[in-house]
Length: 339
Image (cartoon, rainbow, N blue to C red; front, top):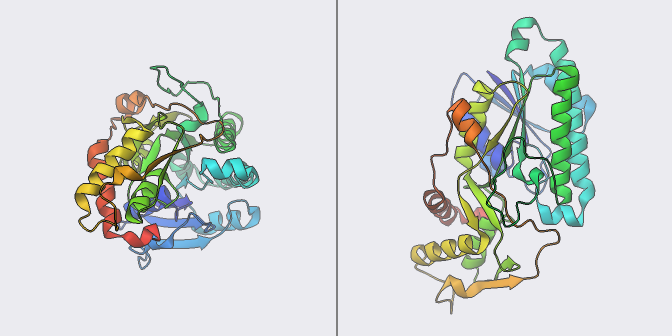
């Protein structure tokens, strides 16, 4: 099968590329504009594969994207490419509007044009799978509720608003033009190769450099954490068995307060690092509470019952097993933290 992946040099996209290319019968074309969050080092393992091709291109480039579609003739399009850091979206929302909304619009338009020219056999196979986030649903506050696929959208940040907009476009292209789409909304991902700006790599990096670990507010915000390899398996399950036009929530069943997550990392890092930075007896002493983020959502929690019941997927990793694998990987690959 031929997979066209956007944002394949990013954290989750590169994990997908590495997974798919293991099957020698698969072909992967990776489109990535190589922003600051991209990392081609995460793809070294596939660079010499005859089944892998990379194109440095902006998904907003209408002409180039269509040329790539026609040349590669994909069976599947998996759309990861997005600006995703909430703090950055608050400071510079324009790039989020451009990439996440206009970029998705351009991909949908080109996909539809490409799809219309396919023969009937290939049309039955073709899928456009859009990767989104649980942040489009907004804030659960201090309730005991969970996000379901039919939870009304209520985004809080420019980032989540741009992703919500792209979700609506994807659904509209199915309803209006009958483009065969699938959509997934995932919880917070973590694991190897994640960019150093994200919470878990940041905590590991701060401990290794004996620097303060900044925690927004009181650290009471709750997130559901999903190991990246579990996420990849879920996406492939949706691609293979998902019903066209449907959305599927993907979660790790790991709702944790930020402060508890940080303390768990501190505990593991103290146990795993024999040579601590000078004058550092315990990583816990580095925790520092800072002013809360503007519009900071209190709680996200995913109800992933639909994908479990309908498609048979559930995560393999608990947070305890996944975070230990993640810390071990970063300790063995410190160059990714740019210490």
